[in-house]
Amino acid sequence: MQLAARCADHGGEYLDKAFTLHLKQRETEQKLTIDDTSAHNGVTEQWNHTIVKQIGALLHASNLPKFLWGEAACHIVWLMNQMTTKAVNSMTPDEAVFGRKPDLQNVLEWGEKVWV
Image (cartoon, rainbow, N blue to C red; front, side, top):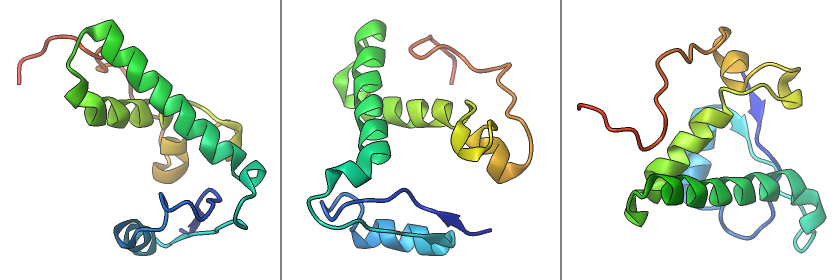
């Protein structure tokens, strides 16, 4: 299955070799917009802004240390992939890729103490 990546400007955050290789390995097409046309990047920029804001909210609410920002980002993006979106006909992105609705029965609240 070939998926189209969100449009990205030439700002660099989507141009590094590791990310480009990651997309190729997953048969995802990368489309770049024209330089200095931030209006074309509205969806991507808004998602990035939302993720950053939610990272701050999770870390603040849980009183966890700031060095866990990467874990918070992964958790937020995972949650976003479990929520329905118009981009994939009111399915979850997870459902669109794997063909099944996500099971969220055992999802714990961020910052909750657990045994590992």
